[in-house]
Length: 123
Image (cartoon, rainbow, N blue to C red; front, side):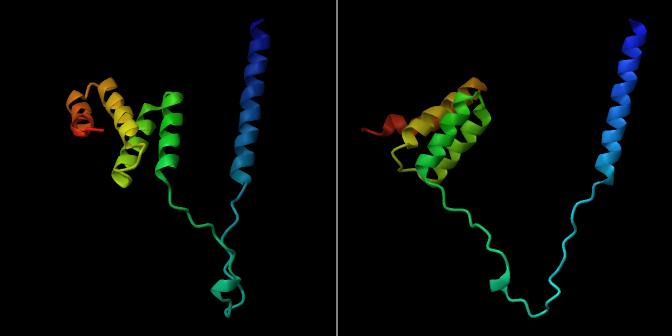
């Protein structure tokens, strides 16, 4: 039984060594500048530009992060929503989510500060 374990251990070490050698032997392709010195930017490949994010997208991402238990990301996304879109319809819900995140961490003062605008809002 011990010899089978030893054989398996050696096989695993050998396979890991081979994989390590293979990874070291792989090289990343180097940047090759264009051989044509007259190349213009219009000949370069197009890159996608990031589209501006909306309050709804931030809110959906925050809820998704909260659903899977990633409270830090949910709090960050809620905070971004409140900074970028303070008057958005999702802002009160984002405040509640952010306050809940602060409360879970024991930051009661921060949670109260986030909720204060909700208490003063008559709607």
